[in-house]
Length: 354
Ligand SMILES: Cc1ncc(COP(=O)(O)O)c(C=O)c1O
Image 1 (cartoon, helix red, strand yellow):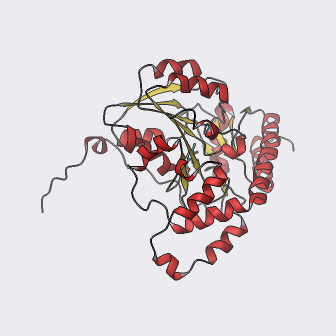
Image 2 (spheres, helix red, strand yellow):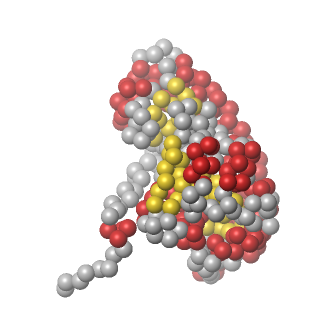
């Protein structure tokens, strides 16, 4: 049967997103900024208690939202749960972006802003981080004069690790009188800074968070949007009725109740981040200061061959040679033994003494 499907223009001109590499579970996975220590044992206990009846019911959100709002130190009216951080980002397109309107991003950054913008047929205005991965504050303020619908800022930024502080953020907010300012705080717990306390003063401010990283729940997909009640009410209109599953809610509640595990993981990441960067510098790599659970490094022109050899040994890093420059790589801070193993493998390939 001959049929002509009325596919949208923006979709016709896209390629399918290539799913991230599969078969990673037995490898040293330092390529996705996952919590390689795994989630709290309390999460697994909580999941094991779920009953058949509970699983057969549509999820109820009031009580979990109240408890998770406490974790973020906001009121339930200021919190919206979504199906992972990716989904928390999508809602801004449904709420604010019409085909042909513009969004503002600073690259290199998390690719999902560009990804959704292409699907929604938005115009993408791109600024660049500096050579030392500094945030282009002046340029952003100037670009806001053109009133893009949304500006997306990952804070800390993935992959550069760059962190914007409150005074810089306030400068942006003052300039954003006709723009939704989305602070994507997927890694906030590692940076010690969050824009959440500012939401009541700035109705244009939206903060997104995720339970994938610090809580180690990437497989369950739970994210959040935080904003003042009135602004968030607009976003709620664009949401389906059951965006989040019960297992994710139960797991997240158990994760935030076990603060010791989460704080211990954050402390360990920060300790290893400093030590690992110093070790890489000893091997001749350039490193960039990072506020996330990852590190950007530059191994120069020999980098791509090195990353390839490591991959063959089952050590997965994120080669950023194509979008930042030859030899740039983003390395997740894993456990101490994983980081030692990576260093050993790099030393061996570079034939550097231990
Ligand atoms: C900056 C940033 N935002 C959002 C996400 C999405 O996380 P998730 O969809 O797992 O919650 C990531 C994941 O790597 C990220 O790096």
